[in-house]
Length: 250
Image 1 (tube, rainbow, N blue to C red):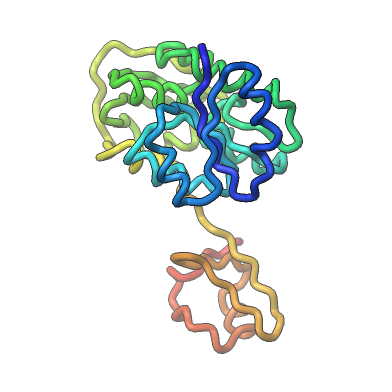
Image 2: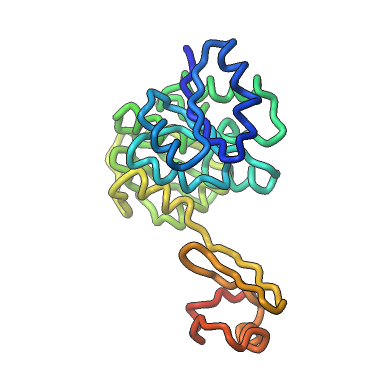
């Protein structure tokens, strides 16, 4: 079965490694180097996406238009661990430098399996596969101390999102469930579910150097040991002196 993959390559470094091997093996690679080009290739018949983990927001935004199963390109073990802690499988990540044949193997596994093969592809891939297939699937995920039921189309949970994420970051088992679940949390769309899954506290390094300005696209979360010390070091900071602006570390 031939692969149809979108590659988002803003640095234009990956396509040169993959173009020839895709052509020789009869697979199709659609390449985009900018958000505008990415929006265009979403109209293709691809069902898989190869994208740097640092560009994950682009994938999240695309879910409202096209459901693509991602393989994230990572640059470190720490970045790879972040992908796994979100509930993705090892087949959803490839670390630079990588073997193109190994990558093709991972893409092939994602391409040929169905949502029912959740034990092989993992929970998150099963959710994405079920959405691609338009099928409803109810699964139970269970760690040593906690369990939660999740259903697809639409996505609903029988537990709080905090419990769900804590199970994902642990060793857990997956089994299919045939009964009805008591809904605790539901999501209006696949995009809303994954945006919530990827949401995390942003740690911002603040350097006590003249002229340093720390910015974020939408907000700033400051992690500091002593709340008052922050304002002693930065007397002109304009965040407002209220505890909700600061995440304190004991």
